[in-house]
Image (cartoon, rainbow, N blue to C red):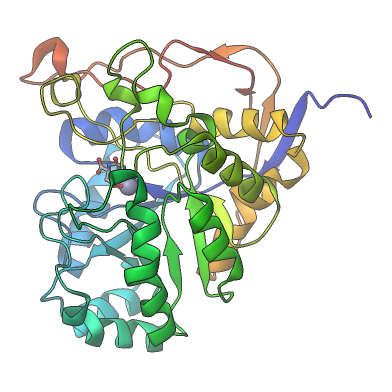
Length: 352
Ligand code: NCD
Ligand code: ZN
């Protein structure tokens, strides 16, 4: 068979995205809207999005920040807290404002301080969500500081996720941005109501990338990249065609000022080229025929939405990840945002 040099697929969706707000939102949203028809927008603003009214207002700001003519629908999420009200969440879902609810264990990652401290506090909410069919999106890392950071995902499965899924067997759960073979195995053997998103960067880098020639803050995100055998397990899962695995970039912009500092933020900003990078991974693994399932079909099927009708085309033409994205803010040049693998070569280019 001749080597594929072109791929046309239904427009993909990004099932895990951070757009932030204000100037950063304005600077980053076009990268996503150019490539993806819809995105699940994370609610970890400061303060977080916990009410239907906040989500409506944030959705309005996202739509207002889109370039003229963009065809992009933000799907909003609710940030789960210990004192969340089941009625607020269920009403927001029924009114079409919330698409899902995000569980951050308190302290697990960026802007998670208001997250859930004790799963016992949210049992009533989870019960209501199970009945209403509202998906729970899980940041799956234990916050127990005694657990090695590279084992926090695996320990979370045993201590929190497995018992949760056993108790709420009908709850739709997305295990977000999985990074380990343990997570791949867990999701694969769970029921059809349990799925996972996989980022482009976790398919491309292992933990060495954070220390290559010195400390590399732009390779640091949570969950942190793991060992090579975990990366390879993620590639097998993503390219398998298994409907439980779908695209979620976890593109998470932070300014240079907050990344390149003594205590740098977690988050990799991949939106400018994540789609092209995913295609490259599938091409390298001889799996272009399963790319549409991963990028455009499995996610909508899990969420109970129709896949997009429009298509996009990528060609195997050399390209380049953009350099730093400037932001006109108080931080001056340090207010810019560096994309994942900024300036590096891309082997696929979006042409239509
Ligand atoms: C995310 C962020 O910056 O909001 N950071 C990250 O490292 N992925 C939060 C998250 O998804 O964990
Ligand atoms: Zn995220």
